[in-house]
Length: 485
Image (cartoon, rainbow, N blue to C red; front, side, top):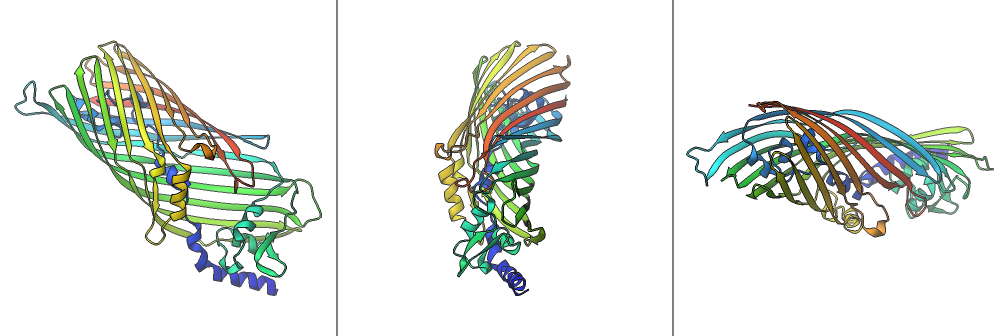
């Protein structure tokens, strides 16, 4: 009885010490810095390679110089259907899960106004636009599991070392203490042992359910100068919604003399917020065959609110114990890296076109910030684990008027330095088709985007456990309906 009361009292006392300890890390900085291309089906069908082509609503989030190439008013809407399949391999055990999702990738309008008293070598027109483009999606289900001889408690007894129970993190180690999975080393109240005998074979399993995405509202203006130079700028209001629930469990495969039977660690995260950025770009057409584009996007400063909660259940000798963390609410900021993109397009009259984009982004420059916490260690990890990399996009379009056929390829480089040994590069293959009526007042486009990637995932400290190799396969079907007037 005394032991139970002692643990309860320490749990209550420990709340004030540990609320700040369940904060964010370098993965949060990467999650909101690493975006995907999203927009109209024409844009997606060419793998987002459009930086020197122009006259597409997606360009408001890519190269605003494309606004200057519009000659008519335009209204578009682009729903999509997505399928995400994740194959997980852990210690020779393989599992797979699938997630289907409906979303809207793009909608908006542009208004084109001819310049007054225009001359051949002067301002030709001005374009104003409002658009929404989806720039990331977090939708996925993951099922990972296999046998191993280490335990999450091996990690937690290490991180608990040197702290009395009243100092333990109430989202992690204190839960294990209150459910009897961690206990004191006899004679030392700052060192811990766990109730799982070293070397016992355990079946470890984790389910991850992730929801949400990132979208961007853009307000912009573009201009056409002499039908040679097209310039534009946009203000972006980006929004984030990220939800993840995870259930991690361990169970003895073969009973030993220990009392340990089972543990379950639940965690839930909900993040919402918004940020602001500015983009500017141009497209220059020296000759009809060639177009050159360049754009820059300032860092996006996200103001985020995260709600986080965990719980632990243990079964020891048939006795079930359960403990809950408090509900932690954290307000913090993420500053994403600057982006610069260079583009070149070759226009073959009414036959078709080819565009090449190369985007530079330095993930090590992302930063976390809060009013009451400096994130010194977390930002150090960002600098040490991430690097500058490039994203290559190549797309083309063939015209068989009134029909169009498109295709593209994109390679997004891994953000990790070589020492991390985690290749998270992404490869996209896209295809699409379109139709425009004779008056070009109505159009419909269709695109299929496929992506594959792989990335290591660790249940806990990577020095203690082997990684789960997750292989991602995504298929996205996008349809755009548009009107010009």
